[in-house]
Image (cartoon, rainbow, N blue to C red; front, side):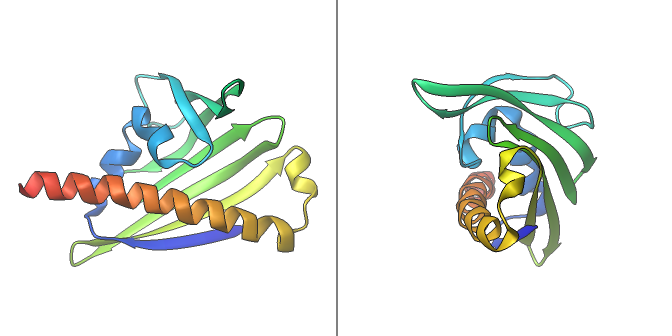
Length: 149
């Protein structure tokens, strides 16, 4: 399992406002290129974002579904990106003094990507997930800054 963490200069409420906005998914998730639909009850368990992965003209339509959601603390997702496979992503947050510590854990569960040994897969996932958390931080910090303006 790959684990990546980041301190975000925003509250957990600002971070989860971004996570709860399914239409922002492609703005912070590396690899997601567009959002086709967000189910109205997102981010409640069982709800999905319908997105595309890749770059035009090689787009693959797929979905991300919420497994578990604890507001301001945890969002666990079943992510799909076939033909690569599918996995689970957990975003866990804790806040102290207005700074949010986010830990992102990702594990491949099905498909060809599961054949990669962890010593190969984990560093690749870590690089991608570090950029994902950077993008999430920019959105959450921008949100926090705009609230104070």
